[in-house]
Amino acid sequence: MSADPRTTPAAYDAVDLIRAKRDGGALPADAIAWLVDAYTHGRVADEQMSAFLMAVCWRGLTADELDHWTAAMVASGERADLGGLPRPTVDKHSTGGVGDKVSLVLTPLVAACGAAVPQAAGRGLGHTGGTLDKMEAIPGWRADLDTGRMREILTDVGGVICAAGPRLAPADRRLYALRDVTATVESIPLIASSIMSKKIAEGTSSLVLDVKVGTGAFMTSMDDAHELARTMVRLGDRAGVRTQALLTAMDTPLGRTAGNGPEVAEAVATLRGAGPADLVEITVALARVMLDLAGLGPVAPDPAELLASGAAFKVWRAMVAAQGGDPDAALPVPAFTRVVPAPASGYLSRLEARAVGVAAWRLGAGRARKEDPVSAAAGLRWFAGVGERVRAGEPLIELYSDDESTFPRAIEALAGAVAVTAEPPAFAPLVLAHIR
Ligand code: URA
Picture 1 (cartoon, rainbow, N blue to C red):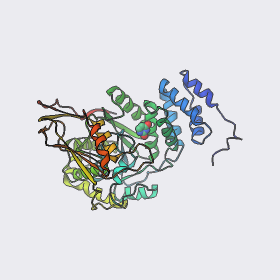
Picture 2: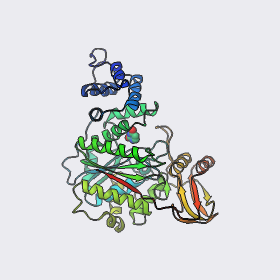
Picture 3: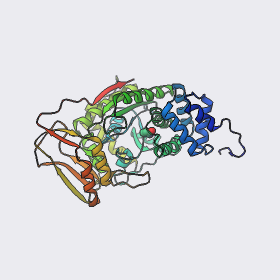
Picture 4: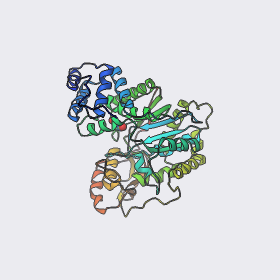
């Protein structure tokens, strides 16, 4: 039970802490613990926390303050106990991109290689998709699991994708909703602590971060992506979670699809050994880092081989069935389709990630507010990847929707997103850096 705010004397005054941060001061550990706890329990008002968060956006947090802030967010709820499982635990978190269905392939792949992967995932907001929305396109599949059932599936199958329970880092849920409406999302310490508090509370022993950088990502500059990655790796290590990060390119959407059902279909094709090269490359690179972090590097089978052999697909089927899904069920089919033709003949040299994400969102695949429903069938598929030849007038992008009226605005979002050139574009690497 939380303390009664009318009778419990405050250890600190929120206004003093806001003023101290506004003026560039550093707060002691107990002041930060008090502030996060008091806000979580309603003793510090939204307007006071909003002012504090804005002061953090301007002034930042010292490394010590950030450790205490993150620890206070973890302490606001439960820390799941995944100790004693027969396999080492390792998870992955992506900072979010367009067409990013990596978790769907990576979780069963790393489980097939011998680790336990407890993937507590989220829903999409805005132009980036969410792993749970994708999985929910599978008929019967349920996201909610308690820790007991999660442990059972991790023991029997090795991989779980589920909703982060309401008891994991509840302070983050309140803070994130407030940041969303006060223009205080874009702060590296606030993003790092938000992501890492949930991952630390989830109970994994090790973690790889896929920090996306490019026009379709949160971080559009390499410098910011490096700083975010270094900050999160440090927070993980300080909290006893072995953490490394890959910086990966997100100027172009990943694979050939965006949207919930279309991405599940592409993930399944990849698990059957017929995936697009970019998705396979990033998934295998992340799998290798995860196996190293889990201590399985020298003994685990090669993830590229297990993906090609169908071993990861077997684990996928078991994972889906363990959460009520039917791995053989047909995925939802859109009521309407439209085709956008290639504007010229030559090489596809640009397919801009953010524009594709916005188009998918406008077709119904994403939500504008947390409570909005999403369409399982809506989305896009493109027939050529960047660097491949296209011919003027032939289909380049196919759009899917349950509502015909969504097509004009989705097509409008794609204006300027595509470029076709006479020469192939310069080679662009996908994995940009490894932070450890
Ligand atoms: N994802 C999160 O979980 N938190 C942030 O602050 C940003 C992205």
